[in-house]
Length: 401
Image 1 (spheres, rainbow, N blue to C red):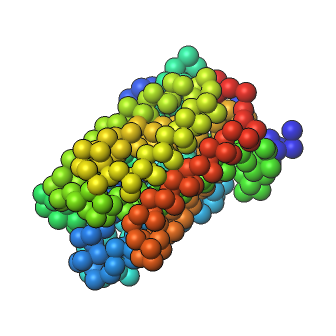
Image 2: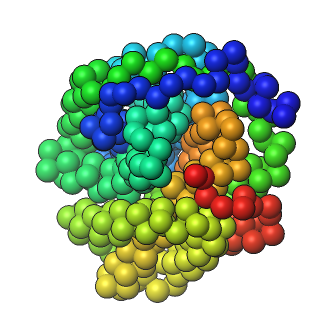
């Protein structure tokens, strides 16, 4: 088909390397975990970052918006630009950019420097995520591709739900600058692991930007991306300001917030693996459940979250549902475009991170303009929209092989 011709170059069939295997898959999962942790890190640190850099919490939330926007643009642009290069040095180089961004963030004397630092994080994050998403199939035998792909994507999901509480704990034990230095150190460990464990990974295809964008014309791809926009925007409109919600609605102390976010994170990890198993059979079914649960829990937070016990339950269910979003949505898109894995992944990363940026932005506007309860209702309404698109849009027949 024409779409495939736009994406594939002269060498679509590159033999899988005989080395790499599960240690390499673990290294790639470590990379996805690190870059998404770096992206999410400010969420649990907005209050101290805002205080130190003398900006409002809504403005401090722009540290997430900037990174998401840059990641959204860099993923579909870097994938074609780096298409001819071996993936091992590409991943190592992108991890180095991420490390530099986190060190600069830790040093930031004022907000402008922090913005530059978060731009670097966005470049590294968007590129690593887009490249890593299609590597599992090249590192393990065919019978293990499904499990390896789930492991790579679990790095994204686990970071989304554990990166924030980890950063919050480090911020409470030391300070927010130490949290950024810690992530930079983790990035260095992962860079070394990638350099040592990955085999040579020459480009499978010559990917053109036009071919990446043409995938949007496929109704199955477009539906999947629409669900991502609504779910992720809604989630991050609310979750970017979850610390503020727990402080104002539930009356949680700083030490209790770290524990509550850890509960959220553990639930999210469980949700990732449970959803990954289900999505391989029916990505639509899993995303319907996720959308319904997110709409309910986020909407109930301002209504029933005044009790710390109730807030803990809602946060745990919220994490359980959101933990499955990335693996389920990625499974949908890989099934919708099996002939263009890396291009579909680049689109997914771009839309996902653009939605993170949009969510942080509209959440910040709502928080500064109407208060934290309005932020929760906004998140719930967008999840209802995702439920409708998932139910009515065109879905792939099944998960990827």
